[in-house]
Image (cartoon, rainbow, N blue to C red; front, side):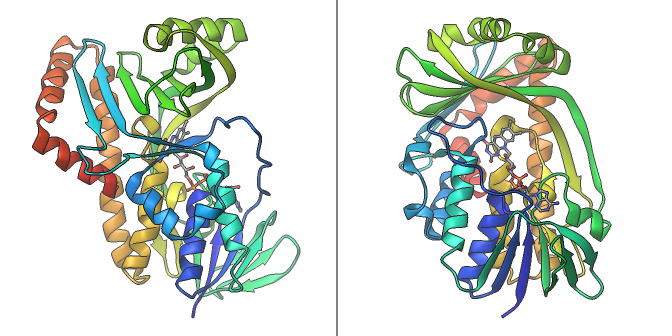
Length: 368
Ligand SMILES: Cc1cc2nc3c(=O)[nH]c(=O)nc-3n(C[C@H](O)[C@H](O)[C@H](O)COP(=O)(O)OP(=O)(O)OC[C@H]3O[C@@H](n4cnc5c(N)ncnc54)[C@H](O)[C@@H]3O)c2cc1C
């Protein structure tokens, strides 16, 4: 049995801790924050978790701890260009009952922490922080002056990873020059259990269904545009109505916030006995909702290769890089103002709509 210290108990770090604990390892999970108290309304931080990873999370035992009111299955997914070419995927195409679920990040994190608290081989330290990394001696000093020795240190502490910094692991990346505006709304007309995204030159807009009458609306625009429309709530509501009303009818905005869009990829996923998972290793453009799914794939791959750091890095770096490049190509392709490129994308979507190709793409997306 090894002692794993996982720094960062977000969705990825907590899932890694739980999977390791179930595999019989000794685990200490550290997070600088306490759990966020659940609120009756949906939080803005929501993730679409694909069905493959959702079934894996359920197999870890979260089913009894999750608040099912803040889990909404979706059966369909479509992308459309402003010129009207579209591509749709359904659960039927994938031979599944659902393509995945929309789940509140806090809800999933709380369920994972609750499961962890039932394991005698797990120590949960939150709020707590590592003050001193002694990577050579494989020990850490926490902010309560206690020392922890470990066999393996996992950095799952997000895109500003302290573990990556301590291990001297650098990143390659850039800012997309855009922000993503999220707004949770109450709709007057019911919506289907489908997520959709429409691409226009200034950036896509999308809908994530939270229930029959609730949705999260997403609008990607330049920093300048988002800060201009976010000055006053009335202005923001008007901008959202202009974009979304033709598709969903009238709605009331409950809460909103915007986030900058960055791409960051660690140059290495491990150094000696220290490794990175989730956003600590890669943060990706959220337009296809892949970020946390890639993190779950990191955890599952690490377990599948029996903790072989080299194989872990080889497999995950390649796959994450492919997904990041795909997101960049989509971002650049759909925001291009060239008519030729736009028509080409229309043709490409029609081609992908062929049943065989669609099934292959879905298979790959569900493995992400
Ligand atoms: C607008 C937006 C929409 C998104 N939508 C989707 C989606 O639909 N589907 C999807 O798959 N992904 C989505 N993502 C990406 C997804 O949110 C991230 O990939 C995911 O949250 C990463 O999880 P993580 O556990 O790796 O990191 P984080 O969620 O960043 O968690 C890191 C944890 O580490 C803790 N921590 C940080 N620093 C320290 C420290 N120094 N010491 C101790 N603890 C520390 C934090 O408190 C936190 O609990 C979206 C992202 C954005 C910005």
